Image 1 (tube, rainbow, N blue to C red):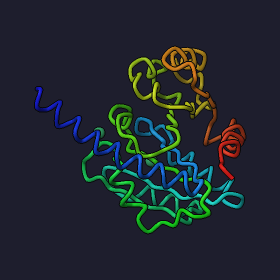
Image 2 (image 1 turned 90 degrees about the horizontal axis):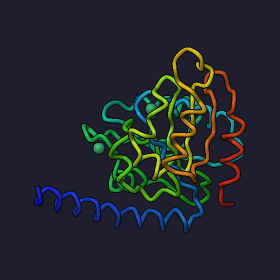
Image 3 (image 1 turned 30 degrees about the vertical axis):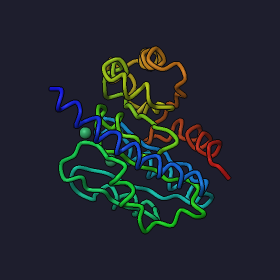
Length: 218
Ligand code: MG
Ligand code: ZN
């Protein structure tokens, strides 16, 4: 047990070192880097598709799309207008780490970029432990999940700066309560910015775009 803990600590401190290098690069080039985390199916890729359609003409956006298998999401983002899209297929790992992101960005010019989105592997547990050099983690939760998710996965909500609640058009078709999820999330992390939206109906998306514009560094 002790040995296992030591190895994990070694892996994480090596990750932190690489993440710090990435963060320096992003800061130097004034790129806003957002790490999108959620369980599978919450709508990370859908939110990025909408974001590309709305902001591609005014902001220079690059995307890294991580999945255990397939480059399907990266292809979707390209079809949505993504000009710089890099897939990461982890081949089994249930999270992205800083080394994977650094490798994916090797040939990506950061100069002139406004936003780099990293779509993490769908998983609410270990992506919270791996710093990718991002400015912020954005955690998505959809109304088809339980409104107690923030209490069950507190680490992820504690380390995120924004909670996006997606699929608000489906409110009423389950027991999910917006008030409850908000209360649970704010109990874990009182600093969270909460944005409620639906990628399908478009409700709330302008608030998301407005928040993004407010965070861009140039
Ligand atoms: Mg996806
Ligand atoms: Zn993992």
